[in-house]
Amino acid sequence: MDTDLVVQAQRGDKAAYALLATGIAGRFLAVARRILRDLDLAEDATQQALLAIWQDLPQLRDPVRFEAWSYRLLVRACYAEGRKERRWAPNLRLLPVDEPNSGDDLSSVVDRDELERGFRQLSIDHRAVVVLHHYLDLPLDRAADILGIPVGTAHSRLHHAMRGLRAALEADARPPVREVAQ
Amino acid sequence: MSADRDVTRIVRSWLRTDEHESADRVLDHVLAQVETTPQRRSLWPARRIAEMNAFARLTIAAAAVVVVAVVGINLLPAQGGIGGGPAVSPSPSPSPSPPPSPSPPPSPSPSPSPSPSATPLAFPAAGDLAIGRHSFTMEGVPFTLALTTPGWRSEGSFGVDRGHQASPDAAGFIFWTTAPVGAYSDPCAQTEAPPVAPTLAERGRLAELATAITKIPGTRLVSEPTDVTIGGRPAKHVTIAIPDVIPCSPSSFYLWYTDVPCGSDGGCGRYATEVNSTINVWIIDVDGAIVWIDGETYEESSPETSREVDQIVNSIQFE
Image (cartoon, rainbow over all chains, first blue to last red; front, side):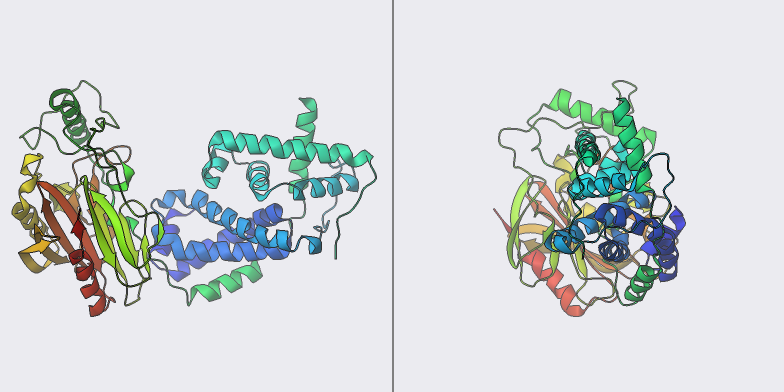
């Protein structure tokens, strides 16, 4: 992260912020999409987070901490969008599979469906820990810092989430029942 | 364990699929909104932990140890310092620079135990502040003040502000839960002048504190220190401005400092929020305790806002 760019943006430099936002938007959308499991909601969350970052940048005390701070705003935006998700849960669509299966780890489409189902059953709190740790490869202490929770809580949430996902995978022996998708 | 590793591998692989999102549309929306969306003014630049050299840290640590060991635990009320740090008030030594001691080592939290009569820290919780009276405690002194207009927000531990940048109602306050004891002799080099009131007993020296403010190089004196009465207590009021041109960035331009650790180490130093800002300082003597309040307005702040800052301080009632 270019700290000078952060400092310039803190001082109201819109061009600097544009560069900053361009550099993080793609990753933000990817994270939000994985937490929310819905592209529209993820786009809204990303948009809200990027705007909040612009508005609150002057209040960031230490520019070096921009990355963690900005992810915290993104996760907050995901919480907000997640509330909408609950309201419209019956209309959620499954993420399209638009990349060939690498074959080694995901043995079948059933695995994906079961994971999708299991993941959707997790709270946003639990999803966020899974995505920060297993998608962004952040150590749990950093994930905890971003989420504003104790490290022990992050461990606990991750354990709970992974247990749920394992249970979902193990359930693939049963006849799959897809979520309502419209 | 092996099964756990398999699940982890599967989940990680699953999360890494579907990576064809394009953020272009989102980015276009955001950048369009940024054009018309003002940033929220920072309260943080009005305060931060000043960098202090090792000598100063040792001095503070040594002085703090003396407070506990010699003066005892009932000297000071327990309260949070600016930024939530421990509130050890001033060195008991009459010397402004007690010699550093290699032993004992610096203590990051040299806070004495609270006395039975200690007044707990009070500051409005972070968030919007309703119209009406709000409670504060500074230097162990409880008081209330009245807000008569909406839009004020509490930072949660030391700051209250209102308005976005470039808005006419923009203003901010810093309520020093532990009063500053001196000013900077070189704001950009962050060189401290010797403390004006290094001991508790000397904190009654309102005039010297106010005068120290007028001598900060690079600032513009708007109004000389004057005697005023706030909440029925004697006080000094002085106003300075941060000029349009200063030798360093506002966030590197230091004004005054406390002598107590706040945060991990060092004292609290207040630096300028921005150029062309006007800073009013009220230093109030409440039975020997110093209550120090900064109220600032900005280039775009309206005269009404400046008057309101003054009115808010004048609404203070000590309990």
